[in-house]
Image (cartoon, rainbow, N blue to C red):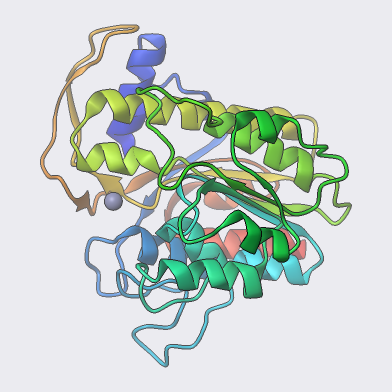
Length: 321
Ligand SMILES: [Zn+2]
């Protein structure tokens, strides 16, 4: 989700760029995203940089590669060690690279079954909401999770008593917002439920929420689906912000792992009409991505930062320095 993706979604949703909800956050800056070799990153390397503070090769999930290959402790794991609850929410499969970087350790992002196994036996997040691949309901139930598989089951949860919930929504990625969504919950809805479960913990929580299909629509150079995904991601941020209003102990960070598609807007066609755009690639680009921050320590993200510094700020915030 680069700058142009954010601008395009604002034009369609509200008639003008600069109008998405999170563009009201007090701290705004830019982020370099390159991988350990200085090349264009993928979500595994960028996710690992944000989750561990260490740059690695593309495809690597929170292990020191290049290097000794040992596991790199993630911010989610640190939060858990400190007694906090943890959650991962996405619109892709839950074993996809970005959530995996926060809760798994694998030399290859395609080790989907092993990533699921890392969640089950290692990081054990309290909340896992996304597409279900390589995980059957019974496997999660045996690991003490309550399993929900659609919107009705999600909203029927007693979020005051549930402590471990695995939302398995379909067998692959969630549908695009632009298409028929069927029985599945939207990102803003899974995010709200995640907050209701995690905020029961008096020791606080760490939650990573990904609008993971913004990237997919970028790969397809599909501006309609790209915009709809970005708007729903903004809706999810609004849910988080509403939860945090009035608190002084909470940090909200909105950013991207990289830009996809080399999107450029040619003309704004106003509210409810898609802008005219061009794309330069069906892959990722190395351009800086935006960052928006609100709350405790948000000022540390002002200006220009590297993606590894996001980890440092999260770490500082966890330890209350
Ligand atoms: Zn991608």
